[in-house]
Image (tube, protein in one colour):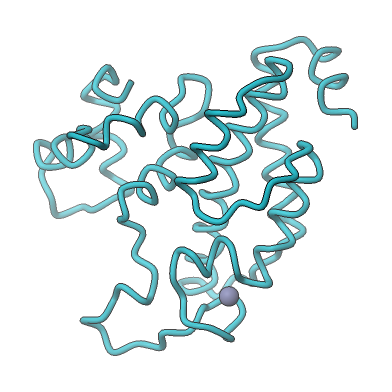
Length: 197
Ligand SMILES: [Zn+2]
């Protein structure tokens, strides 16, 4: 649970969030409240590096600053990846032609057939349908966190560094991260047999 995370860990995460704010404010920002108590245990999992869970956390808290939310800035509102529709969390993760490929690859790899339409509903579905081998269950959670995080980073790298968004490379990286976390917990044989087909 997030409230059990060491305070230093939470304040360390602050570094990637917002420099000007104080650590007490950051801790308050991360602390679950009211109906938000559902999310922490499904977002912050001990085996998933927090740097990947962080973007999912921002998403479930409604704090991903996609261009549709930057109304105070005079900027292009179009999705930076496809330039076809306004950018929103919904578009970026579930409707954009550039990220569809990544989802399809991950869903095929992990045998997820259900259409996923929002990050919170994907999490709720995974929490409900949490059966299968231990390796596969964890693979889904790791891959989801890595996907949400890497798409966001890829989007930022394109906007701020003009690094081309490469869906194939991203898909490869998500699998690589998932495998490396799994190999730290399970034997090679278990991992290979769980993710074979
Ligand atoms: Zn797009």
